[in-house]
Length: 94
Image (cartoon, rainbow, N blue to C red; front, side):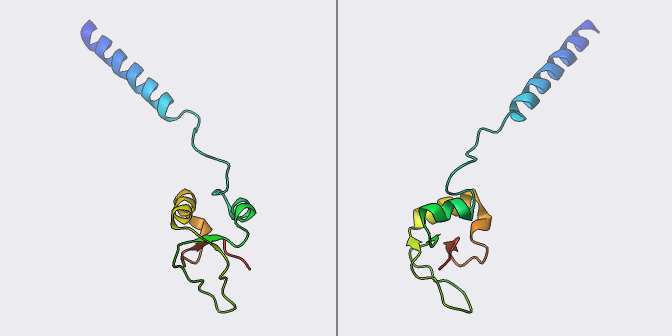
């Protein structure tokens, strides 16, 4: 009986330590040019897009965005809302 209580105590302690470790403070990237369009447009005023992207719009399309597939994928991977219309250009503006 004493061994069972000891095993349960060890299991509870291990579970609590694991939970505290997993629920600790976020150490991820939280500030930078991929966080939102305001920050991204400071670095690339007309947005960033895939090398062969075309702006989908009913008006005049943006054509002077920074073309860099690696940077676009990093931005879209960090915050998928930056390319709201899914045209391959994040935060495009004229």
